[in-house]
Image (cartoon, rainbow, N blue to C red; front, side):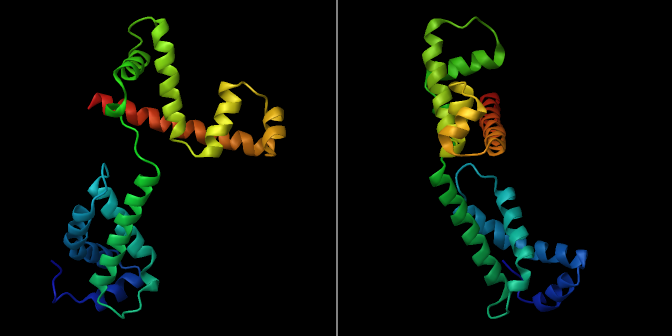
Length: 195
C-alpha cells in the first residue's frame, strides 16, 4: 500500500531535476502497488519483475505527461494496468510456442537435433517439416514469406525482388531479422526443454 504521508510532489520535482536518489525513492515507494497490480493481471509466462520494470520505465519516460489532476499513485496504477492489458493482447495475437505444446514425434526430432544422439530416420522428416512450419507460423507474414522463398525454395534475391516488389537490401534485412526471430524461438524451446 502506498504511504499517504509520502511527499510525491516534492519527490517528483527532484526526479525532474535528475536526482537519482529521488528516482530510487519513488520506485521503492510505488513498487508494492505496482507489483500487486502486475500479479493480479499477470499475463501467462511473463516474469513479474520484467513487467514491473517496463511499468517503471514507462512511468519515467512519460513523467512530463503527468498533469497532477489525479494522485500520482493512481496515474502510475493506470500505466500498470494498461501495460498488463497490452501484454495480454500481444500474447493473444502471438501465442507463445512451447516445448510442451509439441507432439511427441516433433519433440523427439527437436531433441535429436539438439543432442545429435542418433541418425535421422525417414519418419523424422515429416515431423521435422511440421516443426519448421510451426516455427515459421510464429513469424509475421512478410518475414515468413522471405524465409520461405529464400531458404526453403532457394530463390535468388532477384527472383524474390521480382515476386514481391521489394528491393534486395530490404529482402536481406528482412531475412536477417526473420532468421534471428526463428533462432530466438528455437532457443526458447531449447530452454524450456532444459527446465
